[in-house]
Figure 1 (spheres, one colour):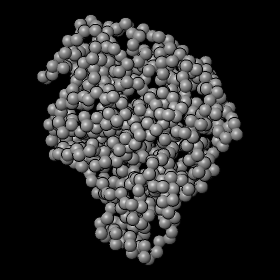
Figure 2 (cartoon, rainbow, N blue to C red):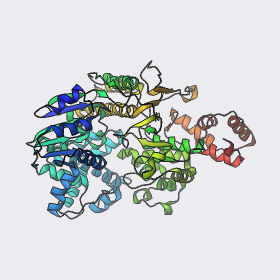
Figure 3 (spheres, rainbow, N blue to C red):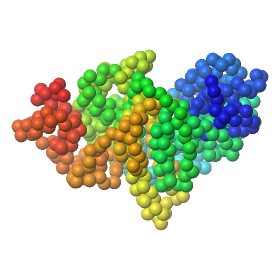
Figure 4 (cartoon, helix red, strand yellow):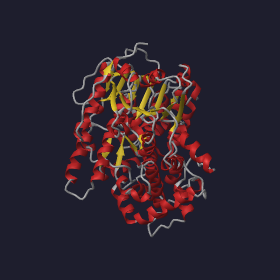
Length: 605
């Protein structure tokens, strides 16, 4: 294999270095060659980002006969040093909100479901602390990572109580009174200031390392190499930091991508240029040297679980010939929140079927309105997404999910899938011949608006840490689009709204034209969830005001008449897609599908 000059410079370097590698630039190959060039007696540690990357790396180093390289994840290192040494028991799934409330005997303090809201924030505070490099919980201000106004007001009111109970839960784990979490034993490992006995330590995906992981790495006496892509940092929500920017090591670059063509490279660079709107951005150069013409693996990528699930529903309800689909990651993870609540629990709440609700937290809610109030005060994005899906599709959900699961194939048959569905976080490090992006990524217009709002807030009492947090979130949104764009080896289908202004179509870039927004659906400022009947509604087509949302759902609740059936039939036989039919008739897509079935014409679509 012919190595580039950039790769050769890295392989023959000396001392601590950092490698900033663009997507598809062969960083794994470079690291293997770097290890191969070190003395045979050297003890080398390669720290992989997660277990799947670790297993792949073990295989690749073994193929090169590099038996002196030990492959670990940060957690596998910590597990051996902490869990075994202290005899801890690990709770892999962590603690649910209701479990924390019960373990700590939390009080609501006069707030409706206050004990659960507090428990939710305790869970997040623990994650914030365990991923930090701080010595004590008191060294952090949890308010710095709370963004929503209602959530911030709640936390500010009960801050002392939340902090004290956060410390108490950590104390219970430390003493062995309760099982520990993965975050906890990694934090304890960091606080023990371990010295690892290696000559070289290679730290991969450095842009998504936590401060705790970085602190462990920087304390080692070995020659240290950190590898990553500054613009692929997408785990800020897990309190990751861009380690490449926090180290003063000698910098090397891998700027040639062997995955995609120059057209895709140009789009990636233009997308990253949006960072100019929020900070001083130093442009990078990407040389696209890929030339694949294959169209075997096709993927649909979304920013969020909600965006992906809505697109899957569109595919399985409208594309009848689609038989084999595959989800990156466990398919059930798209219908369950990390906290354990399922889409079916939310649907049962929606229908008033409390006896069928399994999740204790959802069961405590008397109505959807109460659940939405809880979401407002906790910034629980996953539950918010489930509420949106339930409000959009209602009782069509069980049948739709059943159809999706029937079409889903096993992991070992992934290569037989007609289409692969994934969020960007789940396909990190993956590549496909053909990629279609869902329209739920950030746009340049939204970035500009966010920056304008930031400028207006400068005169207000907004802390510098909060402003930095807001910029970091926007930066990560741009990174998510960059990662999505650079997953393709050949073709990219991208909605027009996600393209930089005047960016041209090409043989590799197919622009998906979008319907024009109509006057009565003029977009307003986006909100997180739809409050049925009185709140704000976000749809796949844009954002609507309270009044328009009420009108939309008033129409949806009206009985079908002969005139409406005739209108639906005409629109259907005019070959209008289901999204546009629903939009024109003021109903949900699920309601349209149900009526088409009732009329006996759905199978003709």
